[in-house]
Length: 165
Image (cartoon, rainbow, N blue to C red; front, side, top):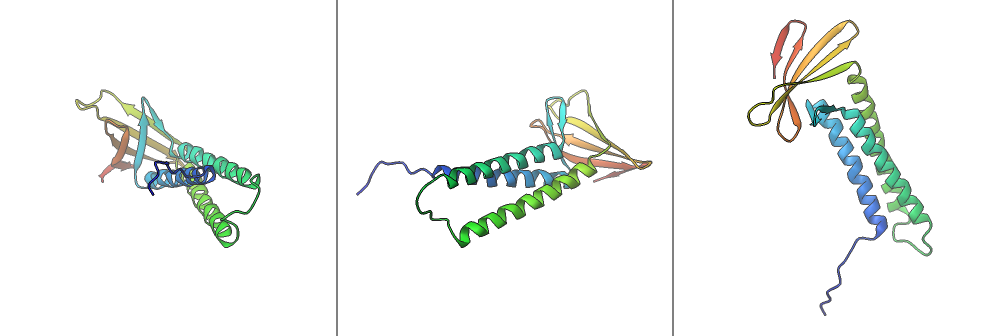
């Protein structure tokens, strides 16, 4: 017998899924930072550690909502026992990895100034220069930013030489 009922995920599963997706996006931001990617929105360069922190916080809030919502439901649950413990351990290990990566990104982003150069290219592309002054040394990086706002490292200067990547 065919029914026209739509099947939806329960609220608990949707909140858990949103929490995991938020954490994975935060992990992606951390990985993107260490691979030489930046994000430009309008006339601002978005700091990777701020974006990653926001996603980490959103994930933790959703996790707490998932726990609270689950503790108020009466009756037996399918996810009791070993699966619930493993899911919690995996979630908090991922939180630890994203949190540690976020702390490293914040440390490496310390003392950094970003400059968006004008004018824009004919196809909407822009150049962004990031200058880092730390512990008596300086470093400059150039980024080529596409029309959607995602930039890739185009060159690096340490001291007087420019190294193109």
